[in-house]
Length: 180
Image (cartoon, rainbow, N blue to C red; front, side, top):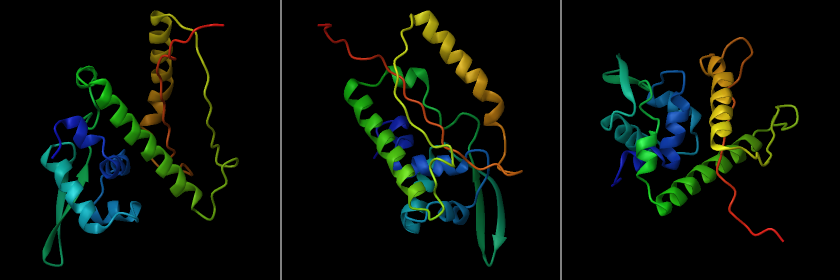
């Protein structure tokens, strides 16, 4: 049983369910179509947990062959871990959640590469690591500028030749180390 809302959200399968629901409501069958490697019973159990915790919600229902089919969506900001929740986490919690995050990112990339038509260079895939020497004020300015730059693109739907692209960021101070 999860000890917190963060535990509920930062779980490999539930992260993928939430990712599938970004910008579009889906039925469990449609979600299953995007998570082909997750057994259906497991998927339904995780959808139920997210719904009971109000991280996702039923936005419509329709009768399909004698059963009620639900359509789920993400309520506004329900799947976002707040700054207050993050501040309450221990170092061990952060390490555990970051490990799940990195593992889920790696699994996403493995699923992408497994596609016969995957071509990283053509698809704009890239990764890099670099250092920014910034004061706290400058860092806040950079964060704000990046968020403002991304904001108009977060609302775009997957139409007109657009495809869903995973955009992940990781930011943390470099560990102090002696200069020789």
